[in-house]
Image (cartoon, rainbow, N blue to C red; front, side):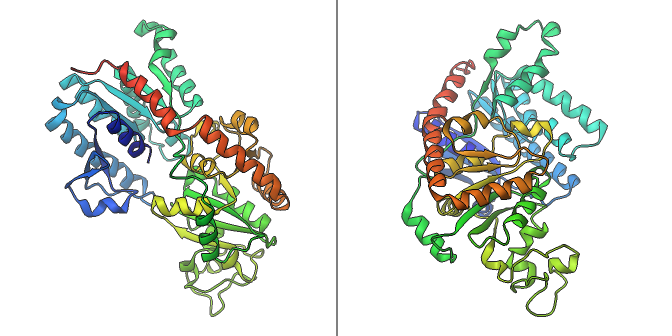
Amino acid sequence: MRTYEFARRFVRAGHAVDVVCCAGYDDSLRSAGRKLLTVDGVRVFVSGTVYSSHMSFFRRVMSFLRFMADTLWFVLRNGKQYDLCIASSGPLTMAVPALIGCWLWRVPFIFEVIDVWPDSAIASGVLKNPVLKWLSFRLEALAYRYAAAIVTCSDGMTARVERKQGKKWKNAQRSREEWGKKIVTISNCCDLETCAPDEAVRRDVRSKYGVCDDQMVVLYSGAMGRSNAMEDVAEAVAGTATDERIVWWFAGDGPYCDHPVVAMGSVKACGGQALDARGTCDGETCGECPAAQGFNLSFVPTKWSQKVRWFGRMAKEDVVSLVCAADVNVVTFRHEPLFYENSPNKFFDGIAAGLPAVFNRSTWLEPWLREYDCGIVCKGERPGEEMAEALRDLADDPERRQRMGAGARRLAEEVFSRDRLAEVYFGVIATTGLRS
């Protein structure tokens, strides 16, 4: 979404933009095969690479290498015609085609750090092999060294990259001031029109899913993987299970989407049957039922399917409709220090729609949450329980929710507007020494 939204703004500004991507998270691209697409003036070249967060580590590595090879071949065939390349990481392998284009065709590139690889992969326990770690750090260093500019998604990421470069200032004879000009923070952004509050959509969606006027919808959207602290979400759901005012919606996918709490809302988890208080199906317990897997479902109410809805992976426009219909946005990450730096798209979509956010840990966004009174950060020893308490308090106080929602929308408009940050991006592009 970030690439698409910035790309179409670059086109509006008069630039010609080509994007090389795979269809891993956008099913609408799968039918394109290797055909050239044009979307809002952006030419899109779709790789045949298959990717899913459910894949094993080995299969994901092979997907990264396949996509790198496809992109590299594209650069070798077409690189001469471009004035600038933007390489987005992760995965870190995206640096390879950009480096080859820089060395072979002298095309300057911006290295966009969406995720600080390999640090994040190591922190989440995905990358363990010492040889792969060494190769990853070497590739990262090359990308930073040869990039015409580095764009990060948060102040914490910028500080991390600066610290990495600080180790090389003396050898590379680069001053802190020089590197400071090269690294720019452009966070993920809010699409103010796409995610604008819409009362008609809100009423229709809530009516469709049987949500009462006095109920509060808590939304979890996006990835459900190792990095997303789904155990905290599970604890928060458990802590609100007996409160009939609180409804949970899950929209997303990932290896942890079969977590006991998430699975309970899934129609497919119990053959379409609702779970009763003992965690069994209305009929005979099936082999895929969470109860059969030994999970503790003692807190599950009889009509659980009305309390938790599992939507699975959805198209962006469908997720936006859920965001517009929800009342609170839940954002969770692992508790390692690295994840303080994350710039989650779900947060920015939420504040654009006027949703207060509940975080399970400290975040670089905290100063904005305080200034605009639009979020709650749970930093205790039991963040899941603390989240549940915060949600119950918000359910008790609709006026506070409304006040926080107004603050969230103001934050989106005044600080994180996509149009505003696109102007910053144009400034970075202008300083890269475009090839003429």
